[in-house]
Length: 156
Image (cartoon, rainbow, N blue to C red; front, side, top):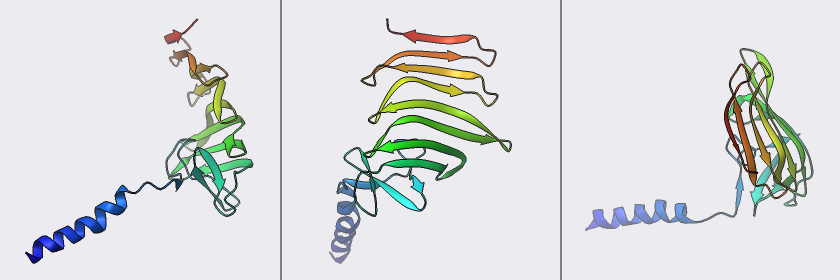
């Protein structure tokens, strides 16, 4: 009987805290929507789809530059306004000791708009994605290394 009580205790101890939903979390991934972004030692946290300055608790406005944590082969340059991505957003990769532009996109009030372009390491276009002003994907085109279209899915 003591073993059952002990197992129940462990279950409560480890399972219940894991079930709680924390509305404020630090980003820990690799993409712009999931990564810890640091600027001059500042931590940003996500709360209700808005990036907050972890120290002040206010929506973040400013530049984000530097390495994307957990992947030293990437770095990004972006801007935020009132806790949302705003304007040009670029991701650079380092491959064989050489840095190259991997991705370029545009945000308006946190929504991806216009053309997003992905690049091969030699600078040629790998893919283009076009978004309307509401962030809906309306066109997707992929290219091989020679520049030939390999996929085209555009909504007219």
